[in-house]
Length: 192
Image (cartoon, rainbow, N blue to C red; front, side, top):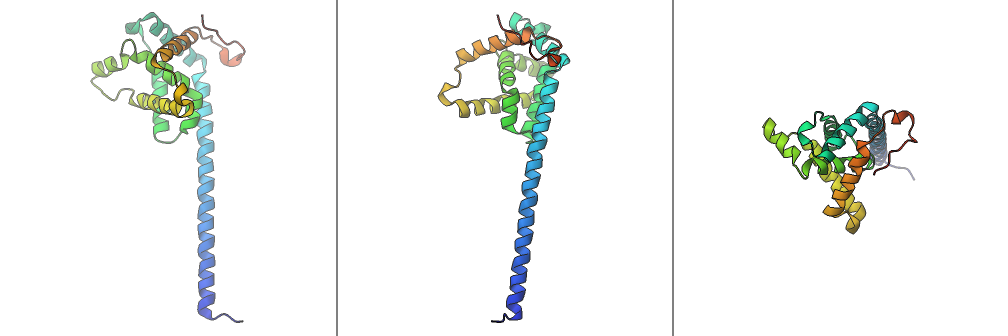
């Protein structure tokens, strides 16, 4: 059986388009894999910075002031600025939400709740600076983390009372962070 030239042309065209579509699908898959890998590497790098001596000192300072209720004595917003950056990168889908939830979820929740209750430092800061967008990506990140918590834990998601206790417990741990921890990860501070 011989095929006429039109049929051969159509088969050739169909084969070419199949190859093009397959190549594009493979390129998309590779690009997506590279994005996921880059996101994972970025989260790991950010986590290392979060555990650096400088950031641990900033976390310790902020936690101590929040526990003491010395909100007016908070001199560094480095922790919140760091979480604002993580929120901005996540919001723009440069970081994977699930990875950020795993790496920073606890701290995002703890610091967000601690600066909103009992004194709403975020509202005070926004009012004093006349900028309603101060730390808005950090706030967005908190709500995303909370939504993931609800999705993953369902009915077991902590009530407001449990969250306050967990927040205070975590702040107590943060308030006694040891410097040099990154070099000696075995020394983990315990809460009172």
